[in-house]
Image (cartoon, rainbow, N blue to C red; front, top):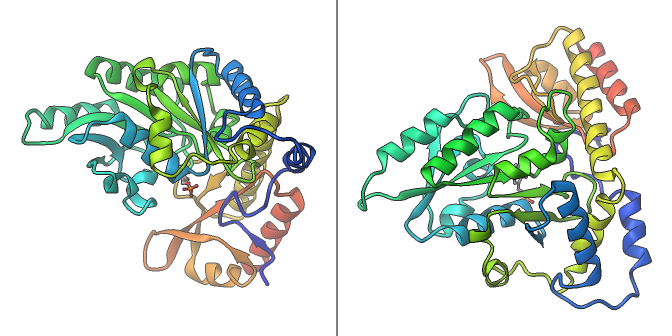
Length: 343
Ligand SMILES: Cc1ncc(COP(=O)(O)O)c(C=O)c1O
């Protein structure tokens, strides 16, 4: 048996308040397919938090589902989406977006983030009907390597997308972690105003399951529920998702849980750094990527679960450690102690 899993931020079930809310509403009868009162209450709270009373909010069960739904519903068959090579849709979604018939135009990115220059270059390279037509830009906040877009970076990307008539879509699987990062300078309201659509990740931030897709751009709203249903994602018991977001957006729970994960990641980062190890990326969120000698990794692996992320050279590998809303200081300190003993 392992001591602790740092593999991801969804190894636990749900925050007790969410379980309580599920229990409390258990015998209440509600209409199906997310048209119930609790989903509507959750929608209202989300609209207030994002500062756009006119947005549409749809609840779905997972991140891959959100990404493929949004991108396939928003684009015509010959249109494509631009994304960085480390982006989740490029590497960890089993070609789900491509399987809907859309090419992904892959660019290198800097620190896991796409740049305006890269977007412009893809558009310039695709200029007639013998090629796909770039129509959307996929970004994630935080990124796959834990970095975040600054306000200036997102404003520049958003302005370029508007100029080029590209849909800007943000994958917010770890949006809570990005928004509560000590280095974040973008509030949810501004972030929302800069993108055509995004989703607020629940699965990785204390929900049992679920993501809330937000569509700002009125042109993209019609018929989205047809798309959800056709792809098998419109849950009869949609209430299950609504209840969780209703609770996450009651008071500051959503932000408190994400902030805790970040604070624990920072404690882990400082401890690892003080033992003399370096990092693959400078992450201010809840995924960190320390570089350890392979022998240290093999010993750590006897007690801890985590993913190897990138081979740095023959003798050293970067691993990914993810802290969750439920991790305790005690776990972090015990890991650091064990690492110290191994070193
Ligand atoms: C940025 C990002 N997007 C999407 C997903 C996919 O989520 P799911 O596993 O729920 O399909 C993940 C999961 O790790 C992710 O990190």
